[in-house]
Amino acid sequence: MKKNITIVGAGLCGSMLAVKMAKLGHTVQVFEKRSDLRKTDISAGRSINLALSARGMSALAKIGLADQASKLCIPMYGRMIHGIDGSQNFFSYSGRKDEYINSVSRGGLNALLLDSAENDESISLHFEHACTHVSYQANRCSFSHLGQNIDIQSDAIFGTDGAGSEVRKAMMARTPELLFNYSQDFLRHGYKELSIPPDEHGNHRIDKHALHIWPRGSFMIIALPNLDGSFTVTMFHPYAGALGFDDLTTSEKVYQLFETYFPDLLDLIPDISKEYFSNPVSNLGTIKCYPWYAGPTTLLMGDAAHAIVPFYGQGMNASFEDVAVWSEVLENHGNDMASAMHHFAEIRKKDADAIADLAIDNFYEMRDHVANPIFAEKRKLELALEQNIPAYYSKYAMVTFRPDLPYSEAMRLGRKQDEILLDLCKNGRHQSMNLSEVHQYLLAELQK
Image 1 (cartoon, one colour):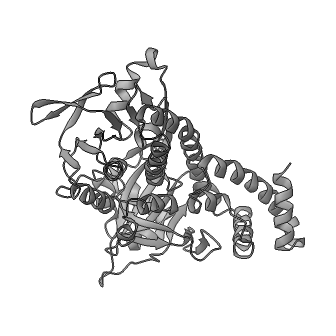
Image 2 (cartoon, rainbow, N blue to C red):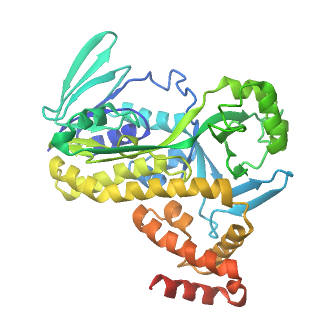
C-alpha cells in the first residue's frame, strides 16, 4: 500500500532512502535544516571526501546510480605509508586486482542523490527546515522555516538526521516508555582538515591512487585525492599534550611540528600556518543506541542510529547498506512498516555495533601498527594468500569487499584470522610453510 513518508535529514543516507522509498511506490517528503548544498557551501570543516567501497556501491547499484557515482570517484588501491625520513612504502588493500576503494566527494555524491530525488515526482525536498518536535505516537513532525512553524502528518517517519538527530532526541525523551539505551564515546583525539593543492599543471603532487598515511604513534595524518588534483589532508591528534591541538596555538609551534614529524608535507602545503588556523578542530566519537524504532512507524537509520569514527572508511557505506537492508526487509514483510522496522533493527543492530568497534580497532592499527615490521610481514602474507588462494579474505577485505558478509561475521572471522596470522609471523613459522599449508593451518585453527 502506498504510504506518505517523512524523512528528517537530506544527507547521504536520507537522500538515498528517499530515492529508494519512491521507487517502492511511496510518496516522500524530505526535510533538511541546512541550505541546499548544491547551491551553498556548507562543509564547515566536515570531511569533503569519503571512502566509497563495495557495500556502498552495491547499495547505489540498487537505485541505479552506481555508474554515475563511479564518475565522481578516484580508485585507491592501497595505503602509502610515509616515514619521517621521507621513505614511502605501499601496501595493497587486496591481493585481487579488481578490489579497491574509492575517494569520492561528499558533496558531489550527496548532490547526485538529491538530483535523483528531485527528478522523481513522488519526492519533495524542503531545505532550511529545522526539526523542532517529533511525536512518534501521532506520526507528526514539526519544523521551523523562516520563522514559521510547520506541522507534517505522515504514515511513517524516518530519522536520518545524523549524529545530533532530533528524531533520536525525541525517542530519548521517552526513555522510561521505550527503555531507550544511548551511549556516546569520544576519542581523546580530534581532527583538523588541511589540503595539498594541485601542481602548476593541475595534477596531483603525490600518487593519486593511494590513501596516504603519516603514522607517528599517538597521532597521524592521512590524505585522500580529489578530482581537481588536490588532496584533502586530515590531522588526527590528541587534544592534550605538547603535540596536541590544545597546545598548537601559534604558527611557530605548528611549523615546528611539521618540520619534526612531517617534513615532506611542508613542501606539499605551501602555507601551513594559514591552512592550520583556517579550519576548526572537530570531535571523533561513536554513538550507539537502541531501540532504533518507536511506535509502529518511526525508525532511525544511518548516523542517527549508529555514528562511528572514520577509520575503516565505512560510515557512509554502512548508512547506504542500511537502506539496502531496510528495503529487502520491507519487501519480505509485505510492506508492513511496523513489523519491518522491528525486524530491521533487530538484525541490523549487531552489524552496526561491529563496524563501530572495528573502526576503533583500525584507528589504533593505522596510528600505531602500519609501520610495525610484524604487521608489515602479516600484511605481506595476507596479500600472498589473496593472490593465490581465491577463498581467502583478510579481515579488511571481508569488511570492505564482501557486501554479502554481515559486518558482525566479518569482525568475528577477521579478528580470529588476525590473531592466528600474527602469531605465525611473530615466531616465523610461516617461513617454513607454503601458502596452501598456511591456508590449511588457518582453516584448522578457525575450527577450534
